[in-house]
Figure 1: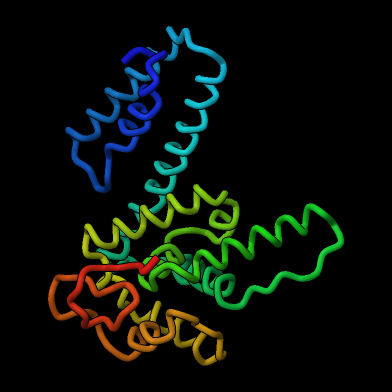
Figure 2: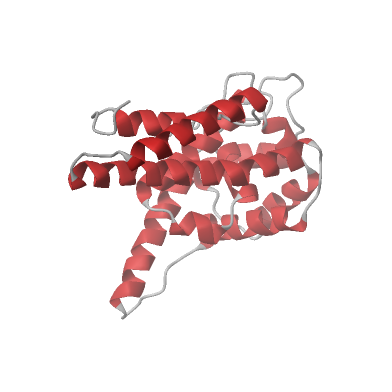
Length: 231
């Protein structure tokens, strides 16, 4: 498409995100081909600065999605192969500490006040997603990365993890003793699990589903319904 076409930026983003996960050689070649085409089109761009700014915003968001996917895929491979890495539980502990226990301190500095407000908003949004989606986010991503994301970028991360959890039936791979122990630790500390309370209890007391269908994201693990974040 022409760089001045109004649909160009949307097409570019779609091309950049063609890879939904552990993709094969053909998908990689297709993705690289579209990226090459995009780079060549940029050289001949003749639109306005406003158009260019719009493209930059869209591509920045697409870049963030791809970077998140690049973090998520190796983590999923580790979970499926039961490769235990210490940072999995460290990340999950830091994530749950932020989501369940974090309370911002009163700040005089305006910049710190803004950071605190953003943290509270992030915390609130994370509390509303499904338990298993939250669990996978906590295992895969550093809390510093999660806290740095602007609102729409955080939405993209949540959507990515939620879809991957459902499409690739990943919930059973989360039932590992090391992760169960982390949840037990927070429950013993009487941390409020809010809407996750029931499913967190089930997670620590029952095993994974007996079949290949993932449980409802906020329901006991033997529920055969499709994942639902209720968000």
